[in-house]
Image (tube, rainbow, N blue to C red; front, top):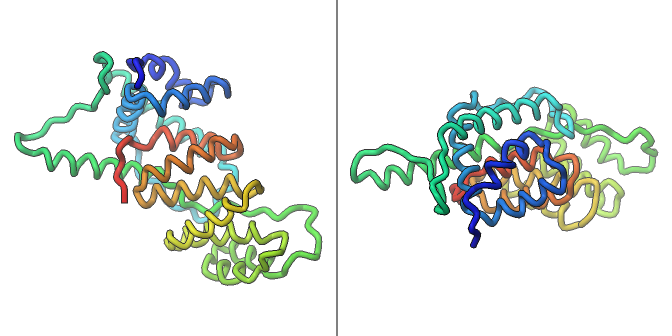
Length: 268
């Protein structure tokens, strides 16, 4: 339990979304946010407003998005969150220590309809958050000639956006090869692109289970995206929190998405 009435969210949320808090302040706010119903309620309200004020659902690009993401994409996401925050500040007024709720108007006896509408809104929010775009592959500059040829051939298919061929070829990279984890990661994101979400989750969990590697953070991030696409908020929060804990290239994106998941979102 906490006696907080949302003061910390009022003070830090805008800076947190804009990424202007220090690492120490951001970490402290995250630790508070997850255990404080009042601050969590403010984030929920922000997301409802952001969803209503946001633009059209994002479309799949014709080419893979570079990893890490382009600065313009982050700026667009930040702009949407800030617009939502400003609208939220106008609509939200603290009302004591109880958890704030976004008011809604309905006809008498329509409780089931309200629950259905709330579940649909949560599902829509998470689907919009899901980033199912392929990360770009850039081969190392000093790559030797001793690597398994299946990896090079598979990544050529990947760069052509031929995910089916990429999965088939990369699956032939031996487990003992230096590129085996990278092959497993790109198999996973290709399966994600092909909407084979169960297989994609399995492939990316194998990468995560291998422990510290150049692919682990990205595997955690895309595991979260698969969970979002499945409307599984609990799993998405888990993997986004782990992504944030690694403080790597996906930190900003993971923070923005974690703040955007509605509490009590629809679960599969």
